[in-house]
Amino acid sequence: MPLYQRIRDLREDRDLTQAQMGEILSCSQRVYSNYERGDIDIPTATLIKIADLHNVSVDYLLNRTSNPKMQK
Image (cartoon, rainbow, N blue to C red; front, top):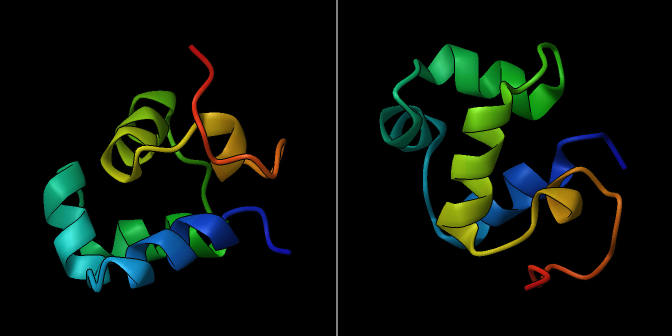
């Protein structure tokens, strides 16, 4: 599984376009597309925003766990 495959899957599950995600994250569609493909690393603050938006843990986004729930 590519590093950021879950980010794409979560976006598609919510029927959001890359352009819409770019607007939410204050970046262009092209930059967001680069994030999904793993062409550029996602800044920590942006990764946290994505996790919060989808209500999952950053570890889940990074494939460090298969449990999407955030630990409290």
